[in-house]
Image (cartoon, rainbow, N blue to C red; front, side, top):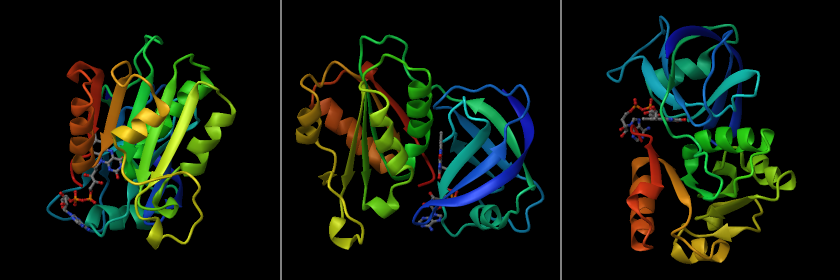
Length: 240
Ligand SMILES: Cc1cc2nc3c(=O)[nH]c(=O)nc-3n(C[C@H](O)[C@H](O)[C@H](O)COP(=O)(O)OP(=O)(O)OC[C@H]3O[C@@H](n4cnc5c(N)ncnc54)[C@H](O)[C@@H]3O)c2cc1C
C-alpha cells in the first residue's frame, strides 16, 4: 500500500442523498475489486472532531480507467467539503486495503447480501467479474427502502444480460413511500427470500457488507440457516 495524491475528475448524484466521486487513477496503482482506501482531505475549509480522513470502498472496478467512491451525503464537515470540491482538487489516498475480495474456487457460488451504501464494493466485484468473464455463480441480494435510494441499481440489474451465471435480486422495504415503480422483491432479506433463489443455503461463500446493523442482522440470518462461520465474509462500514 502507498499514499497518492489524486485529482477529482467528476462528482454526480447516484441515488437520493448519495454521491459518487471520480478521481484520476495514479500511474501504476493496482487494487483488487472489493478493497478500500483511506481518503484524506488536503487543507479543508472546515473540519470537525471526526477529522479529515474517512475509509471508502472502491466502487470502481480495477479494469476501469478512473477510481470512484460513493457515499451517503450526511451533514458532516468532511462531506460538506467533499460535496463542494471542484474538479481538479486533490485528495490524499492511502490504498489499497482490505481482503473483502472474491474467492477463487468457482465450485462455490458467491452470494452478496448488501444494503444501502454497502453496495460500493459489490459494484466493483460484480463489474470486474463480468469484465473478466469469471465462471463463478454470483447472486447479489441488494436491499433499500425504495429504488430512488439504491445506488447503481440499473447497472447491477443490467449485468444479468451479459452473464447467465449472475443473478441480481433487488428488494425494497418501504415501497409505500416511493414514487418509483418496482416489480422486484419487497421486504427485508430473509431465509424465505434466499430459498426462492437457492436450494442449498450452506453451499455458497457469503459476502455481507454495509452499515453495522445490516451486517449483524445478516450474520444472524445465515447462522440460523446453518451456514458455517468460515463461509461468511464481512465488511462493516463503521461510522453509520
Ligand atoms: C472498510 C470500510 C469501508 C467503508 N466504505 C464506505 C463506502 O464505500 N461509502 C461510505 O459512504 N462509507 C463507507 N464507510 C464508512 C465511512 O468511512 C464513514 O464512516 C461514513 O461515511 C460516515 O462518515 P460521516 O462523515 O457521515 O460521519 P462521521 O462524522 O464520521 O460520524 C461518525 C459518527 O457520527 C454519527 N453521525 C454523524 N452524522 C450523522 C447524521 N447525519 N445522522 C446520524 N448520525 C450521524 C454517526 O453515528 C457516526 O457513528 C466505510 C467504512 C469502513 C470501515
